[in-house]
Image 1: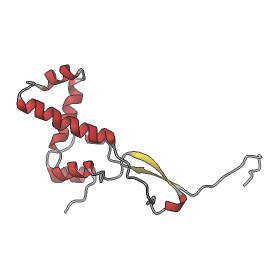
Image 2: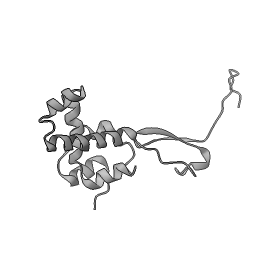
Image 3: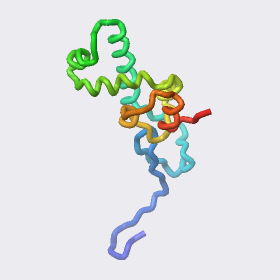
Image 4: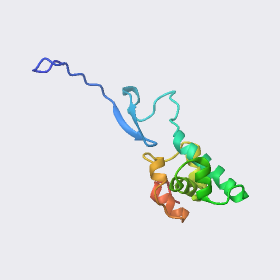
Length: 133
């Protein structure tokens, strides 16, 4: 349509949703949330952080490197970053599996995962929005 001031106004029926921590445009033919033939978005930052966490934990547990601060110096990163990423190894196994499979709840991001979270797995599921039995 043409507005009173002469500008064109175009209406495209679409939704913008947060999926796996990212904004996603859902096209008109998929307003129900499913986009036929589209691949599931993968949160590579989350997967990379999980891989780092378990790799770094193995290095520390094997004794190759003696402490988090020594690991941080070796990697040339901040010690608090290493500690936050290492904490991901304390996530419930089913949460880790869901993250690897790209089945995390909408809005769950690496930033949220690296904030303080409880050690109790049931509380983790509740905090991060995973279904609890």
